[in-house]
Image 1 (cartoon, one colour):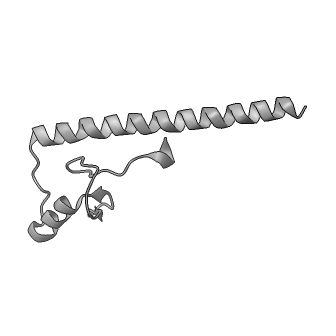
Image 2 (cartoon, one colour):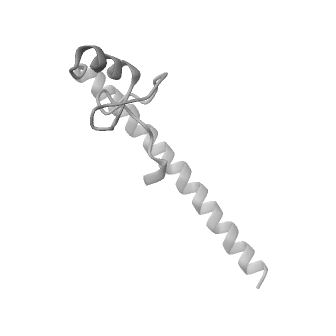
Image 3 (cartoon, helix red, strand yellow):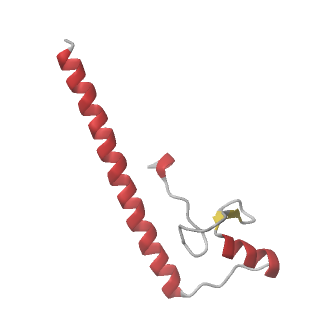
Length: 88
């Protein structure tokens, strides 16, 4: 899952933004959270409802991506196995 991880805001957990920024620790934040910090020098407050909603979407998207990559790797393995059997 390492190289296929989705990018998400470490503050509000959104996965879509027009521009990704970095916080002071080098983690990704969305444009809104990054600009809020830039102008207010504090982390943007996010309601619990918005944060949990975005987190649910993030988990669902990551599971979908994992399933797609797992199926793709299974197909590649199967093709290699069939190729090896046919060429033996």
